[in-house]
Structures are given as structure tokens and as C-alpha cells.
Amino acid sequence: MKFDYAKAGVDIKKAERAISTLTSIVKYKRKGFGEPILLSHYAGVIDCGDFGIAITTDGVGTKILVGIAMKKYMTLGIDCVAVNVNDLLSIGAEPLAMVDYIAMQKIDEEIIAEISKGLEEGCRIANITLVGGETATLTEMINGFDLAGTAVGYVRKDRIITGKKVVPGDIIMALPSSGIHCNGLTLARKVIEANGLSYFDKFGDKTIGEELLTPARIYMEVLDIIRECEVHGLAHITGGAFRKLKRLRNDVRYVIDSPLKPQEIFRFIQRLGNVDEVEMYRTFNMGMGFLVIVPESEVEKVEKFGAKRVGYVEEGEGVFVKDLRID
Image 1: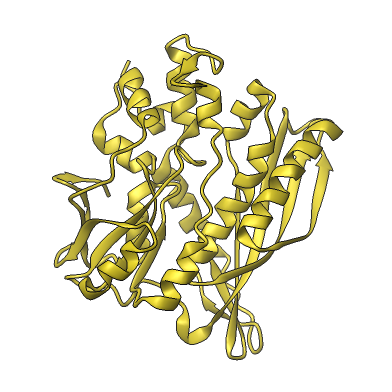
Image 2 (image 1 turned 180 degrees about the vertical axis):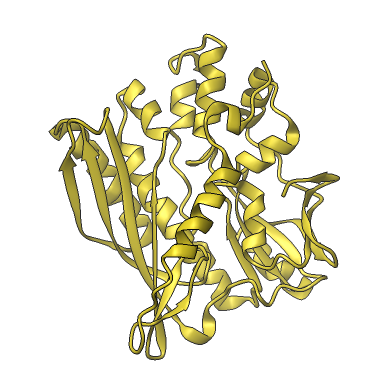
């Protein structure tokens, strides 16, 4: 059977249309102090004088189902911090604090304790405070539990990085991912299940489940990169994968001609599910969890932070990995 993300149950294009519908209806904007200065990006930003307050929200997604199957929950807390903090970093904002939301079919103190250990570790890595949160018991609505968060950060208004400065000739640099992170898990799970495999089956020196539960990397080095280098664009590779580059400027062409070698988990899923290469780069981070776009003169500086050159920006439009069009 040939798998893709839509057949697995997640239709990215339909989700994008739904978001467009929502934003076309919810148009009211506050006036005065606290009015929005950035919308529909990785994070929204509201005006607070010389600074903007950045806000973002996200959840861990169906990676939770792997945790439930494995009875391992700690790393999911790290993931909850990562998916939110990395979005703040994508506009150049320094993370400050977050709140979490845990909805459960029935309260399980042991699961909450394990998730909390992960939240604590994620907050330590990101240098933020968990200032509050909510736990809901939704017996008739939830099967298992769901975990999400909302994070806030700050950025000088003249230092917000939206991607509008990206120009042909810029270089695309990639910071490696730790693995699958939190996107594409629905496709990965369906492929594994369809092949009669278990999360407890061996995968190298781990099990398949342990590999999938590797927590998402939190890219705090981005703050040092933007302090020391001229940066034109930032992209956290999450849902929609490399199509996310069009969130910066969509009137240039992004070409990833020298992608990092993906971790084996990605090729494992591709082989099992007979997944097209284009679909892989539309769904997964493929070993590149965060992209930094800089002028060519800044490449050596950014390399000091562990980033590798993977591509370039040119005249045209679209997102390409080698000769494959991804968008």
C-alpha cells in the first residue's frame, strides 16, 4: 500500500483552508496599547511600547498515542515546551513564560507527574517559567489525554524577523533535528501499524517507540545567532514541513540543494509505507528542524552554532528540495 499524510488522516491543504476560513471571519483588532503588529506568522505580536509581546500556542499531537502505548510520558512535556518556544524563536522573540493545558478522560496523577517532569526540563532548557495552566476532566470527550501549551516572549519591535528581508542570493542554513519531533506522527503510526509492527520492536539500540518519543529539540542557540549575525529569515519546520518557508516571503524561490542526511527513522517510515520523496519533505523535518536564512557573508558565523548550508534563495517562486517541488 502506498501511504501519504492525507490517506493517514491528516489533510494539510484542508487544514490550511480551515485556518483561512477562521481568519476571514475573526477580523476584530484591538486599538491602542496592545494592538497587533504581527498576525498569521509563527507567533502573533502585540504592541507594548518599544517592545512587542509575542504569543503562540501548539500541542504535542498524536505523538501522545505513542507515549500512551509505551506508558512513557516525560518526554511529551519537553515536546510541549519545544513546539511553542521554537515558534517564538522563529520571529526572533526571546521566550519568557508559558502555560499548559492537560485534558484527560480521567485524572491520572502518575501520568501528570511524568508530564510535569518533562515540562520542568523543557522550561529549564528554554529558560522560561511555567506560570500556570489548566487540567480538565472530560470523560465524555477525551479518550486518553491531550497536552498543549501557550507561550509568550518579547522582542524589540525593530528586531522582529518576519522574512520580509529575504532576497535572492541569500543562503539557507539548517540546524539538525533530534528526530521526528512532533509532526507526521499520524503517518508514521499508520505505516507502522499497517506493517504489523509494534512500538516495542527493536530499532537499532532502541525500540521503535523510544525512537519516535525522542523529544523535539529546543533551538535556544537561535537567540545567539540573531544577536551576532545578520539574519533575514527563520523557519521552524513543523506541520507542512518545508512548505513553511512560504510563510516568510512567497515571491522568491527556496532551493534546498544539499539537504542534511535524514535520521534512519525517516527512511524506515518511507520504505515501510512506500511514501514518495515529495511527501516525505511535505510531512517531516527530514533531519532539519530549524532553518536560518542569511546573506552569504554571514555563513561562516552561523556555522559556528552548528548550522550547515543546505540551500539558497533565488528569483522565482516555490519550494524545492533538489529538483522536487514541495509546495
